[in-house]
Image (cartoon, rainbow, N blue to C red; front, side):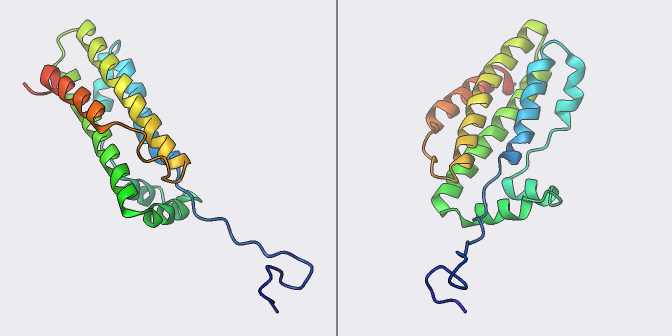
Length: 167
């Protein structure tokens, strides 16, 4: 019988189960596409792989990978986030999706290896910073939610799109 003192039988302390945690496994889709973007500058045949890339939300990712032992906890932790933090993360995720899809369009329009290399370098630098911001958010369970600058990211996205993505 519990006495409310944190001990079940007077001898053994009770331990609450660990709280569900966010998972950086979600970022694998971005790390993988980043690697391909960096390689496509030298190997245009990888464009086919980029064409297959489809963005997934945090929820979609863990629904698709429900077999992962931590998928359910990752979703519970995400749902438990304060709405403004979840919105901040979603905005960052959508911006990453924009960078990737815009980069893919730009790479398709690139005229030569040098242009592909410039596009890849510009996009990969930005995407790498965005992935780092998302990883920080996830590792801190949403406490580090203001560490990324939407204005800086949007400015780079706009420059990328103006030069290569719309045309």
